[in-house]
Image (cartoon, rainbow, N blue to C red; front, side, top):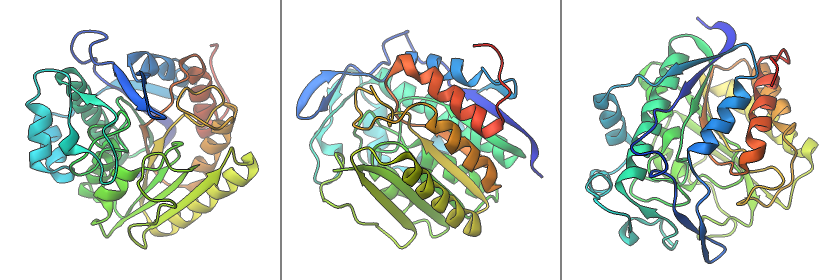
Length: 325
């Protein structure tokens, strides 16, 4: 039974020493630049979500056993062992996506934060399985570039796949995944390719920076990939979102939304120039779909605009009755 139209927001535990789990750098456009993924992102998104009276914040309650079991279901054991055995910040060229070059380092604080992101996502998905119409896993680092045995693009462990596994185990399958981050979810695609009851739809930018082929081709007939050259017309983009939701709703019992706010103007890793209001329209389409939704935070690095993005999303999803900013 679906309970109410509010949204449960699961806020990630703070991992380790403040600031030590922030991404130190990333290779972007062939150059090493300062990392943009850090706890400040979550603070900004939380501030925006909490503008709506119907958002209820809770802690992440999944156990260490839950996290470990879920990770074993989506990632290779050798890869997990290598990540969790790290004692210092290093580059892991053995664990790079096929055809790609290393673009991020890994270290114990970053892996701890990624573990906490998985814990957060499991908790959010369980709220959906328990009857919540909407749950939001407010977590970092993002996960959709992390594959069975590879990392990249700030991603080490795949939160969207963790949510998918959790929903399937709870009897909420078939599960649809809709990825609305700017970038192609190469890791999610690789993980769910073998899950016959999972659909993956992605709307992303072209050219694709995180895949070795152009264009990217679907791994299975259960993928729908739409690439946009330059910033798409908002109406055309929303039409594509609506079409994907229609297709998913006819075949699936639940939805995992990989939500990136990196499609807006001014994002340091972005190339599009949407305004934050686009997320209100996206939220409205999700509400109209009738699906129970587990939202998983992916990208979005324009910290000073994230509260506006998240506030617009919750207003569209839950109705425009908001509290004072």
